[in-house]
Length: 279
Image (tube, rainbow, N blue to C red; front, side, top):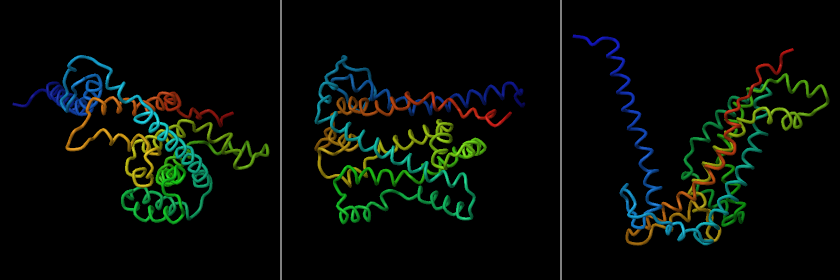
């Protein structure tokens, strides 16, 4: 005997809710372990209530050598590379969005292919190149490579967002004597603020969590970012300072959370250009 339609809908809804709860648990449990272990004086791999609350784990990591210097290095590397990536992506995406050419599609497909290249496949020739041009173990060399590795996808994203800005607004600026660069800086980029925010967050987050690139290109311990120095919490013979690792993870994730909070309004603002070319 077939179930009524309302009963089948209820069963499907319950099954979907159960699946969503399982997915949510897969994300919540690691976060719960980080928070609870950071406050636990005897933290281990289990998700459990702390054996008494303590801030000793934070006191142990909040030093210049352990946290502050690596975080400053990360901010310099990722911040500088993000600014370079967003600026170059805007300059590259503008002609792709505004001018039609038979080379646009092949170029965009080449960019899409470049985004699929695994970073590990090109690190050996990049390392050899950096040694020859004396960029190994330098912050600027790592910034350049970070920017180059994120630039293909940034161009792709920026071009798609730029397509949503009406060209008529630029034509009005051209009538007043503005050049292409002026219209890009004063008209297009301010109007596509949510798109620029998305590209900025994406690039910064991808660089912030990158371990392999700075580990290969930087040799001096004082220049290592936090994504590499976190490896110091894994000691010899399988000994891991779980409480300090969890506390460091919370501090390490704070800049990314703050970046998103600061530009969240831009992300939700939309373009709101539907009436800009009327009248």
